[in-house]
Image (cartoon, rainbow, N blue to C red):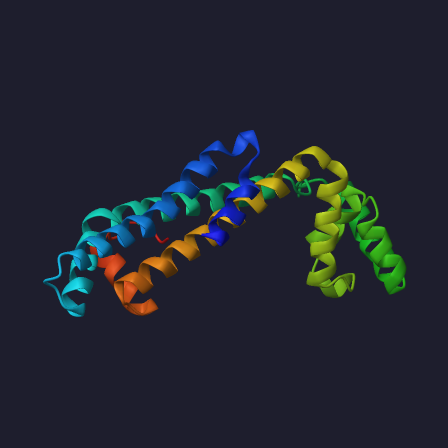
Length: 217
């Protein structure tokens, strides 16, 4: 219970109402299964295997579809965040603009001529979008800018050019991570209550609440 309370306290912001609803649903699923198990035990007529079967039957009827629904919502949230991140990026250039292409060629030569420290500073301290576009549009060997430095440069660009949007995106990413942890906790508690291994649980869920065509949660 402590882990659930700790996680939920991170969703106190008013705009995270939908997140709290999803969180509470994920928390309620193992709680409901626990009550079903207690009810089966209270009958006094079932052995351990009978109790487990009763728990699994309850889960198939009352848990699987709800769990799948929350997994789909979380997946949609991940995709939405990815789309928003892509929107906050270096603008595309016009490939038919010859003057622009020549300028970027010279920029790449200049970037290549710099020592590593100056190159990093140029690309990560309030970076210029034209410089970044020139670097990003060419292969790394033309500038000696590897994938790690590219990621730093893009992050620095987004932070400097879109500070408000970046701050909101960070908060939303953290909130989604809380829901991902809640999903992991819910699945773990459900799986343990049902006496299933991880592969067995995944198979049960796929059978009880199959994905629709085109889905891949």
